[in-house]
Length: 401
Ligand SMILES: *Cc1c(COP(=O)(O)O)cnc(C)c1O
Image (cartoon, rainbow, N blue to C red):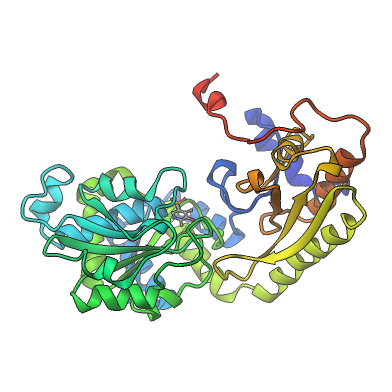
């Protein structure tokens, strides 16, 4: 193992805290610490940590940066995209009425409380988007069926109680049969209903504003490589109303000066990042894996594009019986390696897993390949090699033990 390249595997802080090293081949996962924070953001966080600032002013500056990068009128930073969704929904309900903001979530008298979501968009990202809507005191109105939405199913669901339409862009939504952003926007806008787009995991910071969304929400800690934050961008009156929720239900989604400054720096860094160079190194890891696994018994691999069109490919690995593993069994065996290798196993029941190169440290692709090849070529198999699923709540229910 080239030690210099893998210093992070021996990082002092992790040893001091008693945490084992892991290799993240699964992408940007909250449960694994999201993403590698870019140096510009780390620097900004360190710089501002000992300073006092007027937070409303800092957020005004953040608004200008968010506006410049997204093309929206305004923006603010909150604790997470999940928090941003809650505050955006609350904004659509209360506007800038301060007393209404005080009274959320249970007292919604006189407010519009319905939020329309296509049924195929009701994803979970830790909790469910339906709960994010309900936290503010609103109620989700599900439109269409899991696998299809017709325009009338949104249009005719709009009534005098409709606060917003909520559109989710995610690999985990149903990828067909849904209305597109422009279709959803035109139906909602025809009846003066604002549209909120959850684009938490998307690279393209401009697209949904260009397509007419009134509020778009991004994660600061996914592809942007910022600290854990949510970015809320959009129409000035709605963004103001969203920011005002910091005096209400948004208080529990509070973001500190270090995170605001950090994500502002991450946004500036994003604007000048060598995106082509990053793609090329991700591509090199994928090609290396593809070549390494080509002769492997019971494994067939191919490079597949990101389902929502992010400029990011992954290696799809189909696990066949000849490998001696089921896909969930191989996911589990990789997670039992030293160091553990975390892969994308959310479709393992279908016999496939994915390797995502976007959060690898230099050189880790070789460790991933060696361990996977070792697992297939070893003579024996772990007890759970044929596991049918990887789902269990047993571990978390023992926490903190
Ligand atoms: C990650 C994600 C979220 C949650 O984002 P956080 O910033 O981690 O709260 C919400 N929606 C979608 C579609 C996501 O991918």
